[in-house]
Amino acid sequence: MIQLSNVSKTFFTQKKEVTALKDVSLHVKKGEIFGVIGYSGAGKSTLIRCVNLLERPTDGTVTVNGVELTSLPSGKLKEMRKKIGMIFQGFHLLKTATVYENIAIPLRLSGVPKSEIHQRVEKYLSIVGLQDKHDSYPSQLSGGQKQRVAIARTLAHEPEVLLSDEATSALDPETTEAILQLLLKINEELGITILLITHEMNVIQRICDRVAVMENGEIVETGDLLQVFSAPQHETTKKFVNSLFHQPLSQSLVEESKKTGPIVTLSFVGTASGEPALALVSKQFDVYPNILSGNVTQLKNQLYGKLIVHLQGSEEETKKAVQFLNERGVRVEGANVHVFENQPIS
Ligand SMILES: Nc1ncnc2c1ncn2[C@@H]1O[C@H](COP(=O)(O)OP(=O)(O)OP(=O)(O)O)[C@@H](O)[C@H]1O
Image (cartoon, rainbow, N blue to C red; front, top):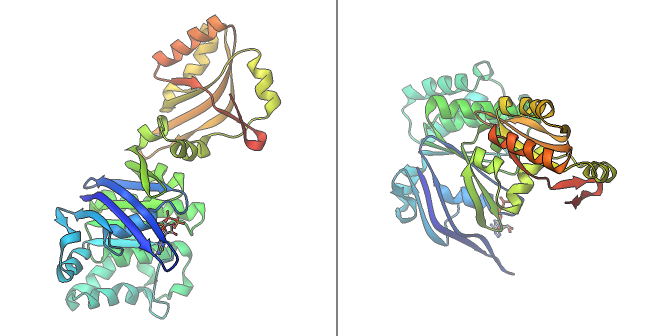
């Protein structure tokens, strides 16, 4: 649906050149929710703005729904852009217009017939759950409601693709969750392909099918959600994933525990394979598992757990216990434990 091929973008300022994207290739499939995550300055905004050519790549091609945008004349590009909606962190609503007019004015400007405008405004206000806010002004709405209006305004153009540029970054956790659920609904019920950028792992975790991790203008890792969570390869990906799971432990606890058995990381999909398997370990072997940190979290469609566990027991017995856990689909690795003051200890 969206194909970026060898896209590079260099900004030339008076003082210096900044290469924001370096030879980025990315494929977003029709109907999926694809998330790009990275720290500040990684190049995420530049990347998403290249998809609808708000930024024109210095090199490479951008193709949306089979049409190569980078080679289109400006008239045709304008037409294609109507199929690509975009929402932003800052909502960009007209302060002096009502909710209704915020949606209707852009429709008028893009030539939608008068008879259809009212119907579309009603339809999309209802989809975002704001049918009772027609006559409110943006200043009378909460942040979450403003984002809903911005989403309705975008959907009213009936796009095939929705680009989300940090759409939940200005919202509190509860409102973020509600907006993420709305994006899921839009994806599932209207069949709109979504490409989003974020610096928050929980956004990726809650709604994305696939994810790319960016650093210094490059994509350093891409994969399915579960694959990236369960076996992150790149250091940056590991940092994002660990930020959700690992609490630092006290050095004395780690040192003390290690005297009587290994500290391991267990990861598993679904609750069935995690803690119950651990309970069986203590029944079947002369091993006492003690959970030191971690949690079970909801990925888009499934539960995923990661626990740091001390396996108290002899080398022979703990080896058997690890094999037993592996056979039950629990992945066991040597733990990369973080102690207070952020000193990793191995
Ligand atoms: N218009 C511009 N002119 C010059 N440099 C720019 C411009 N836009 C972005 N950059 C630079 O390109 C690099 C990538 O910026 P970009 O905004 O794409 O990153 P980001 O990952 O979205 O970061 P953030 O999350 O902080 O917005 C940065 O070094 C930034 O300073």
